[in-house]
Image 1 (cartoon, rainbow, N blue to C red):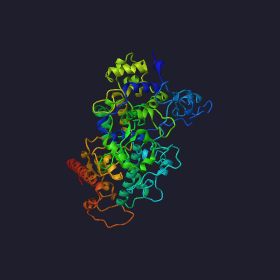
Image 2 (image 1 turned 180 degrees about the vertical axis):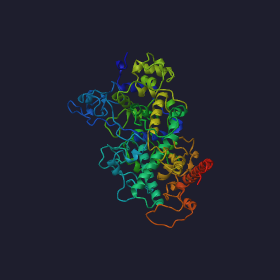
Image 3 (image 1 turned 135 degrees about the vertical axis):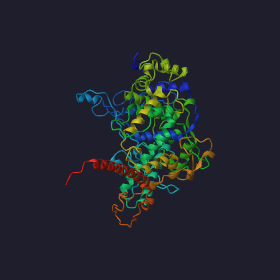
Image 4 (image 1 turned 135 degrees about the horizontal axis):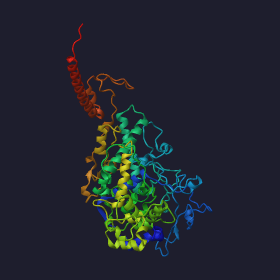
Length: 606
């Protein structure tokens, strides 16, 4: 039996899973909600697959949200009869855009080729979700009235810190609760920034962090142009995001076994392809959907619920007005820091807020995230779960097993395997996303072996294939790199520096504190010391010769005195001196050896 012989509709599959697995919610004892939120923010820095430019049927122009017929580019998800919540016959779905020359268009070019999808943003951890992925987009986000290297900001909060600017001309629908005052979407480097309040908070604190760092660099280097300040801060922000991801976030996602697959960094390799794989963007990185709780917790400065209470998750979708009331962003950040993610070992794959009420406040028809994930995988032509496990990760006994017992080493629950059999009929039919989210978690990880394999491969290539990776030779000085490793890898530091009025945080933003008393003061969190970025005279190693600066200043002939006010290069200078002394000793030894050989030559007679 082939994989396609028993393909039920994805909504039907997930509805049957929900009925069988229940709708409980238990929090993870160790991982905070920030672990999930960073994953979404990070993913929006790495990939975005646009849907077809036309979301109307090619045959008659009917919108894909208004038809239940499978007619390109429409690929609707049929809703089974008797669905308890969604009364429509289908959930509208438009296929992802295909690259020119692939799929049906390849026939027109005379070279038939399977359909390939696009990634519309930069496939690096480079802060594109803050700065945008295109020049025009970037120009719209930068502050241009003053040459200070800053990002545009909007209205101030009560703390005096500003929110993001409004996106008055944007295409994104931010229709809020009809009973609330209408507020337009906020504008950020990624157009998905308004999807939920936690994500919007992350976008806000990182733009604030950019402007805070810009002020710091300008005060230390008053001769720098605004563009130089901007580019240097952007480089620092990208490095901090990389450090947070690899030093703190990935170990909690992959566990020790997954981190061993990732390996250690050596150096830039121009033979490595760092682009985002289809299975990573369309399935594996969506593991984070299994961590999302059905509640948006909002806590006051004493870590208690605010008077207005928590929110159901669907109330936080496209709801920018809530950033300007009920305490604004701080209660949301505290909720993410203090409360846990969903415990995968004690909960169904996805909570009902995502399978029944996704974007319910912004759309007439609520969507089903799990069904969308499965359907998107089919749209992209992803092979089945067993094929990926065997061919890509070396798991299982065959890419096309005849029995669900082949899954037993990864899905140990006999009951779960039996439920998969009832839903899919044949092991070759199981979708990658559906099978992988039901795997047993690796020790100290939040994913099973198949997703760990795909995720580790992607992040290994992202690191090795990035010429501007923060640890690559020549990207930062040794002093700057040490500072990024010391303080730049702390998300708690960024929250302390940029939140409106948060004064206490957990030392690790991704670890759930056992009690409010486990929080530490922001004053105890190591700060990023920008002294490592002070620009210093260039030719310090040539005695009294110095490059002229824009403003002539009296300089001491004492190099050590010069370096005392220039910590950015002090350690580099000291190591260079040691290196030069070593080379000088080698040269002196070579000269002495040569002199002895010359002395042995017979003297010519005059």
